Amino acid sequence: MIRRLTVVTLAIGLTLSAPAAAAARAFDLECDHARYRIDEARRRWCEGDCTTLRTLRFMRDGEGLILTSLAFWEISYSRKTGMVSRSFGGMADGGYILNEPCRVRPFSGFPRKAIYRPTA
Image (cartoon, rainbow, N blue to C red; front, top):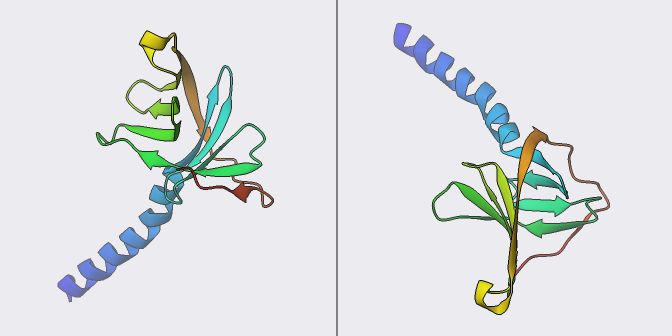
């Protein structure tokens, strides 16, 4: 009887905590120069008015997210530092890196009319 009660309690606890865990994986990042909406579970993100959804990738170390990476352009977010980095070009070629602190905010959701365009 006690064993059955423990299993049922554990199952209920896992069921109740799953939505909370999923919700924690969706958030907004409010930075000085941009606002991002990120949903890790769906592997999607968008910027600004959020008309286009893009593919989200995870860094190998598990500490960061790659929002976009196209040839010489990359936007990434570090969970460890709370910084978003925008980099363009190679540093030897006169490229630049802009690092800015961002604040994690509750997820504001994706607009229904947002179009998904996969990122290569």
